[in-house]
Length: 373
Image (cartoon, rainbow, N blue to C red):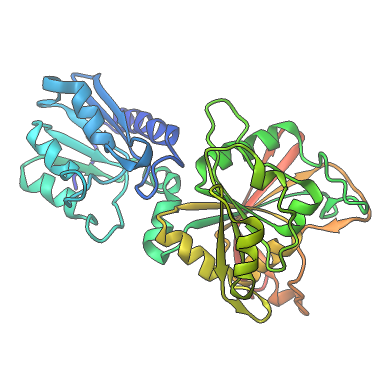
């Protein structure tokens, strides 16, 4: 791929393509969220983002808007144009047929049927291709899709909200509200961007949450309740709340029939999972979600599910909202890990910190068994 012609211009229009992709994040699974901006003579001729459900693709939408103005133009695409025939023809071929003169690609698509092939189609047609523009940002936007392609399971974010002394609730169970309003609004945006939100039975019992996305223009993720002992009430709001998204109860295979009788309905799916060492095999559950084409799962608690998710190594990022409060007692944020030495504990690599309202948001990648430096 060639070097940038005008780095500042390329970054500006790729930034616009990224914003288009971000506007549909969470709506396009099993496909990545992609944005495309077609520019001719320094002016935007067409814009497009992947449609909900994954089709039509961003390039198709942008080319339709640009029409004849696409000939001789530059296309800025946040993800490599697809190269294979699926339910629609390849986008790389559509760019060629539209007469696009140059394509600027944010990052390469890791999907084996596409990886490098879309770029090859463009180059064979004599189209100039520039790559790596805002590459890190483009990859981060589709971290869920990239993880599913690489591992067969969705990208998992473990969200925790705790006091400075690591408590997620007071001794009596009260947890409203530890985090600030801006922090809670951010979590609702994350729900919109996720295919599913997951909680344990303890959270359902303590908080009776709806697990819906309560922001303007939001859409509800699938609500997943992990309940190996069928403790959650069948009339809990997560099962009865009116939503376009279904609820899924995950339990042991031994409890499957009993769970279907108690919870099963047109709005609630019951899923049986294997057990290992006396607990549900969450890695198997995540692989099932990957087979469904899901790209991102938001794990919201509680402490037992957080510990199990970390122990079974299904967490790709920990997001901890630290509130400026001290309880001195109450429920710990994570339970059941039981490391007997500090050097065997989980540390967060690539740690970042930023203020969100009155809170601090700490984010990092969990790494097991490495000494802190």
